[in-house]
Image 1 (cartoon, rainbow, N blue to C red):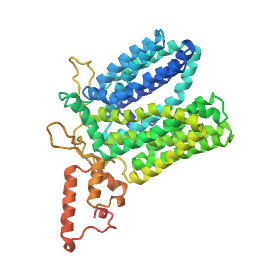
Image 2: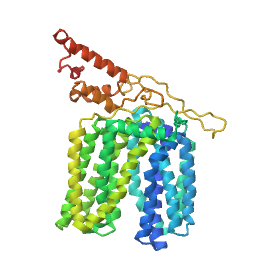
Image 3: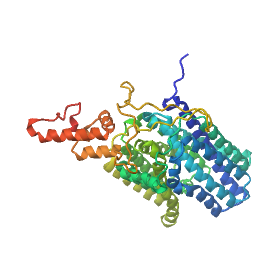
Image 4: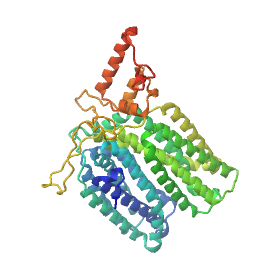
Length: 526
C-alpha cells in the first residue's frame, strides 16, 4: 500500500502540534462564547447592558497588545504558550463558580489579555516551526482549520448547552487550554529571546512601530485593513437585523455563520493552490470587489423588499465566505514576509490592534445609521464604500509582486537537561543558499538586517527593494513572476551593485548598450 502523503507543513512535527492546539483552542472558544451568552441572558437574566459589558471585556485587551508584545518578544515562544494556556485554564474554571456578571466580566477581561499574548506567541512559534518557504502554506492550513471550526463550533456549543449547563461547558473549555499546555511542552523548537532585552522598554516598543511605518508595504496593508474592517463591521455588527429584513427567521443567523465558515474553507483551499502566484494587493482588491457586490445586492433586496428563497441567500453568503478568504490569507502572509522573526510579536500586535480599535467604534456608528437611513441603505452605503476601496487598492497597490518567503532567525535549542522542562528542541538550521533543486528561489536564509540601538545597519524590506529599483528606472512591470522572485531575494549589497552597473552602462551612452527589452533573460531591467 502507498503511504498517505501529509500536506506541506503538516509533515513537520512541531507544526502538527501547533496546528492541533490551534484547532482545539478555536473549538473551545466557540463553545465558551455560546455558553457565556446563555449564562448572562438565561441564568442571570441580564439585559443589553450586561451583554455589552461582557463583549467589551473581551475586546478591550486587544488595544493593549502592542504594549504587551515587547514582553512576548523578550521570552521564548514555547514558554509563553505554556504559561498563558495554564493561567487561562484556571480563569476559565473560575467562570464555573462566578456568582454574577461583574465577576464574569473581570475573568473574561484578564483571560482575553492572556489570550492576546498567547496569540502573539503562536505567530512567533509558527515562524520557527516551518521553513521560510512554508509559512504561506502553514497560514493557509491554519485559516482553513479556523473556518472549519467556525462551522462546527457554534452548532456543537448550542448542542452542549442544550444537554449540559453553561458552567459545565466552561469546564470543557478549560480542558482545551490544558491540551494547549501539553502540546506546547512537546514542542522542540522555540524562538530565541530578543537580543535587546536589556534595552529600555519604550525603545523596544518603538522598534515595532518603526518597522511597520518604515515599510511602505506594511504601512499600506495597515491602512487598507483598517479601512476595510471598519466598513465590514458596519454591517456585520447588524447581522441580527439583516436576517429578518430579508424575510428569514432568526434561526437562520446560525445557518448564515455556518455558510460563511464553509465558504471560508473553500476559499482558503483555493488560496492555498494559487496564493503564491498572486499579487497580494490585487488579490485583496478582487476579494473586496466581490464582497462589495454581494453587500450591495443584499441592501438592494432589503430596500426594495425583494423576497428570495432562503436557500438562495445561504448560497450568496457562502460566496461571501469564499471571497473573504482572499483577505484573511493574504494579510498574515504579507505581514510574515515583511517581518524578521525577532519583531514578529510587536509587528503582529500593531497590525491587528489598529483595526480592532475601529471594530469597537463601527457598531456604534452602525446603530446610529440604521436609525437614520435604515438597514438596507446602510448595506448599500457599505457596499459602495467597499467597491470604491477595491478600485483604489487595485490602482495604487495592484502592482506589488507576490510575497517572497519570509526570512527567519534560527530557533533556539534547549538543553536536554537542567532548569528547563527537559524537552529537546530542533537544531538550528545552517544558514546558506537553498538547494538548487528545492523549487524555492535561490536565496540566503539569514534574517534581514534590522536597525538596533547603536547600529547604523537598516533593514531593507521587499517593498523598499522594489521602490529602490523602480526609482532608478527599472521596468519591473515587465518582469514575470520568477524574475520578480529573484529580485525580491536580492540583498541590499546586490541591489547597490545592480544600480551601480546600470549607472555605468547609461554613462557609457552609445558605446555600451543594455539588453534588448525582448531578451527573456532580464532585458526588463534596462
